[in-house]
Length: 137
Image (cartoon, rainbow, N blue to C red; front, side, top):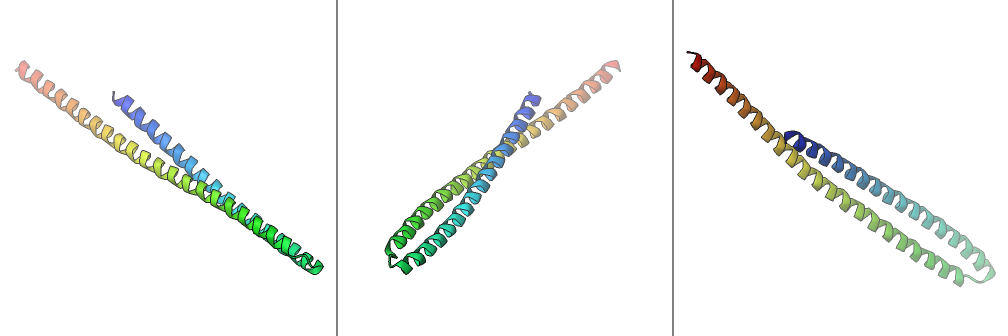
């Protein structure tokens, strides 16, 4: 019974570590995606500015501004999606932390119970030895 409890506690701790690792990986991936979206937005904005300058020279600046605005809105939507992913990853990491804390509490409880049982067995053994000694006399 004690071995099963120890095994259960170890399994729960291993699951906790795996969940935290996945949450960190998801958070890092969301951060990388946000950085990449930001970089693409800057590139798109620069291209839009370059096209705008070229069209202004030709007297057709309005379509470029509309294109830049459209790309800006698209980039903003992408950043919002990435922030949602980042927040979800943080929530998953917090949930994993709570599960880990609960597993640790259960592990400590099992360890205390095992120690108490060990002490009780030692006391019973001592009492048995005292009783045998008394019976001999």
